[in-house]
Length: 603
Image (tube, rainbow, N blue to C red; front, side, top):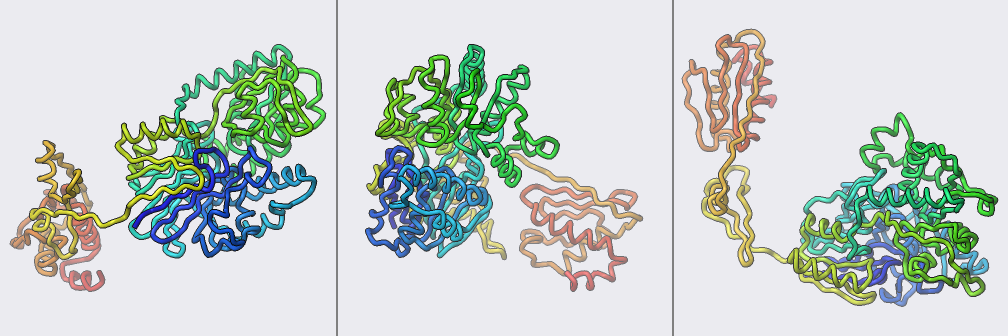
């Protein structure tokens, strides 16, 4: 059966992420975002491609939200309350906690732009009803909904961001959402095992970018800020409320403290308080350094960074301001930009990606006259700097993920078409993996999940024919044949030499008990003569006075003084050794060999 991937948003574009996947007869929606570059119906994905009907519930089996950024969750209340989707919605616990706050901020700004009208949009009540339908998940947890298995993995990027592995029957898809393959000051790098899904759907925001080292970028940023404020200028750093804001404020706080600077630094009202609250609540999602120091010192308390008051914007003198949102498409950062951009002493630093159509994107493009809205245009005389502190993977990180996960196919989303084309060619040529980058509304069909014939060598069948009924060997996959062969045969084919791992354990008996090895032999010989686990190949017939026992690689020997047992075994016999060790411990606790029948009846 084919797997189908259909982008409703983020197909050869960045913004309004929304990917439909048909998997094993189920229809799953990954993300339901908004586009910061549009103020009309185009801000949301085209849900009419699913169905023009108002109720979308019959057409979707599950909706999964990767993280709380609005370009991934901004249309969720519209989907569930305006378009009538009443099915399951899945996200992580931090995403569930933070989503409604950002959604309500977005609603307030949009409704204000529309003159107080909610037409074509969602209400505060819609947000509450939508969040009530959400099922929250922890990392590594597997949730099954109507035959759909869902497992989240750590993605870095922002607090609560996750990659989601979805499995239906024999078919599987890993959806990356946004992720970061390198750790930063407060979050770890994405962590995902070699899942080998049929399809990896990955973001490609920085498809052709390879960033400079983090330390070099930090030095550049601090030098630019220092030069500007020392000349009496003001520095605006647009950021999103959670994520890059904390990363950059940590950097500025440490620099101000080290340099003894007294120039004021401000952040948007509530930004620091919200961050501290959520990072305390979800400390397990941060990196190891934050976890270790959080009990003694909350690194998100910033003594040099104060809440921004409206009066500060027009104040005389140098300052640094962190303001939301990060793309200058609305809110406080846009208002400050309009007030400061005309002065050549000032500087704006854009540390993240800015979607086409936003003011931030126009500033980065070098436009000197920018039309903010129909009534407002500004002249940009201030300095503009782009020092990338985006929490997205760069080209090297994307290739690293593909190599690590080993998918059978790759689908690129959340990127620009020309850059996607370059990255797609590299994935196909360097990693020999088919790669696609569909436009919005187009369909990618991939054949996946069929049965794979495996040829099993005779040696594997002979060596594995035991009571447990399973086969053990090495799976070798070639272009036209997949085989299960014995370890010896696999090593011989590839010119490898075996390594032997031997375990040694000394078990204290206490007072001398010279007959203990004999008792162990009696138990094994008399009561477990046909055990597939213990005596599969050799059942020792030992005399009562034997003091050394050998079963396959496991040897059991008493010391001369009779107070200690020495056990040695190979890794291959670990299960058997564990069973016998447990039996020996119980036997040591009994008073004599006459207690053996009681021991066995209770085991």
